[in-house]
Amino acid sequence: MLICVPYTRIVDATQVFTSFYEGQVKYVKLHDDWDYTRYFQERWDAGQTFINLEHDTVPWPGAPEVLWACEKPWCVFGYTMKVEEKTGSSLGCTKFSAVFMAQLPNVWQDMLVCGYWPENAWAHCDSWLYDYATKRGIRPHLHLPSVLNANPRYLGQPRPGP
Image (cartoon, rainbow, N blue to C red; front, side):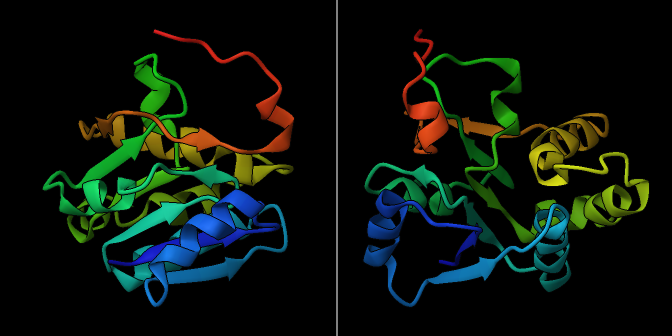
């Protein structure tokens, strides 16, 4: 199993969680607004199935194993218990299989070329991928229960329920 953690600053809870996966985690430092997109392009170029775990996401114990064992090519955990259409756009804890990447070989290159978002491009990777894939008939496989977005800016906000 390969868990990739792109980060600017890893929250403590995510760091503790990943410590249980020694030897299976690859940390990738991001420096600018477009580094998240370039990171995905590099993962796509490698063509190896991986789990993307964002630096402020805390899965429940066993969540990566559930994604890894699933036969679906694109598996996601949302951040709330409420199942919604756009929940599939979450990148916080997502498995991308080699099969999925082969189906969308140009997704990140197209985003880089498009350059539509001059600022905060990283914040649009999720919606870009979701829209790009679903327009081509590819939908994510949603797993429950959800994972925690531990970004301090969101922790104090009320969470929608079922």
